[in-house]
Every structure is written in structure tokens, then in C-alpha cells.
Picture: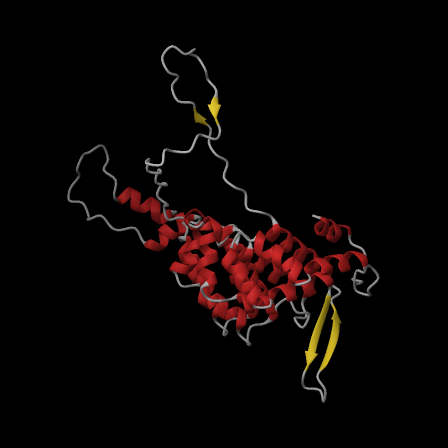
Length: 329
């Protein structure tokens, strides 16, 4: 602040009078501007990601950088800048790297889920990396941390909701079977290294993953709302007819065959332009309903209600009101 005050005094003109030769105006130090106004979000994102991907930095420092990054991408404009600044690739690299700790992967999943929420533009950009198979892999109980698996469901929810192409990739990656296992809390695992191929059943004792999986399935089954037609005023009454009719027609008559249909308005580039240019791309209910029947998801939901897998540290609980409510929805 003292530097700013000194600069203002030195570059001010007292009442328009000139007292001797004046020194040329000096430019304000950019560091001073940053101190006053703060750095742009884009710079903060670059700095945070640089720390996060640097394996020479301490783990706590990297986690703090990822936490700061997640708060920045809560803003939809910053989330859309991820593709412009080529940040999706290093984030996906953190997620798939064998050297990334479980905590690093969990924070990265959190960032991905936040950036994708209600953001079709970000969904399309991230989907170009074909990430669904990597995300689905985190649903397995072989990922020891239940918190990490919950964040994986969070990231999948952000990617799949209102994004039919992502749901298609989800099906191709055997995602429905993985989701079914997450709903039931029963994971069949094949051990081919044994003398005979064996199937071992692993029980998942974490109820939070089951709750979020049920919520995800419910969101995919919700039909896309059709646009409501605007009321169209009736045409002017012919001469001699009573005036003052203020009624409106909700479904106007079809145009004359020779009449050209009105061109739809231009689709301006923004976060939701893909939804406007291709409305069918947001409909996931058909794919989810088909999987509900063909992939055994309906039976999995029934099993989860009738014969719930015990949960808790000692498996002392079996029923969960919140989980049951999400299933009934």
C-alpha cells in the first residue's frame, strides 16, 4: 500500500500547476498490482497444478494445491478454461499414475467431479480423453479407501448426468455391472492366478458408496423435460367479429405446406451450446432404463432392499433409511 501511495503522490498534478521539471511517470510494479487486486484465476490454476504434478514437492503441499484448484473450478468459466489451458491431460495423468497416492487420486477425482457438474462443455472436453474406464475402475473394493470410491461415484455423476455419449462409453466399459455390484455391495472377483480359475465374492461394507450409486442411477433415469410451447396469440379477428378476445392458442395450427418453417435461432458458443444444438445428447433415461432391465440392475435394487449387505466397522448394521429412500425413488 505504501508503494501505491508513493506512486500516486509522485504522479499527481497539484491543481494543474507545474513546479519545475517533473520526473517521467513510472509504471506501477506488477507485483504491487497483484498484491492489491490479486492474481487472475488462470494464474492461480497454473501455479496450483504445477505444484500438484511435481513429485518433488511434499505430499501435503500437493494436496493443498489440489484443494485450492478444486475451489477455483467451482466457477464454471474456470472449469471451461481447463481445455483451453490443456489441464485435463495432467489431471487425468495424476489419476492414472502408479506413483500417485490414494489421497492425490481422491483429490483429483473431486476436482473432476466439480468441474463437470452441470457443464456440458466440460463433459465433452473431458470425454475426449476416454476416461470412463479409469473412473469405473475406482468402484471396485480393491480400492481400499471408501472415501476414494465415493469420490469416484461423484466424478462419474458429473460426467454421466445429461450426457448420453458418456453413458454410452459407461456401458462399453462394463460400467453397469460395476454399478450393480456397488449397489448390492457384492463384488465378484476372478482370480486367474490360482490353479483353477476361481470367483471370490468380496462384500463391500461401506454404505456411502451404495447411497451415491443409487443416487447416480436415479439421476440417469430421470427423463429429459421437453420444452414447453410458448402461448401464441390468436390471429386478428376478421372484420365484423366481436373484438376484445384476449385468449391465446397453446397449439397453433400447422403451417401451410407451401410455408417455409421458421429457422431456429443461432446457437451461441457457451457452456450449454451442445444441449441446444443436439437436444438428444442430454437424454440418458433410455440407456439407463434399458440397462435396468438387461443388466440386472432392477434385481440388484430388489436384492439391496430384501437382503442388504451388512455395513459398519463390524458389520453390525444392515438397513439404511437413506439408501432405501434413494432406491424407492
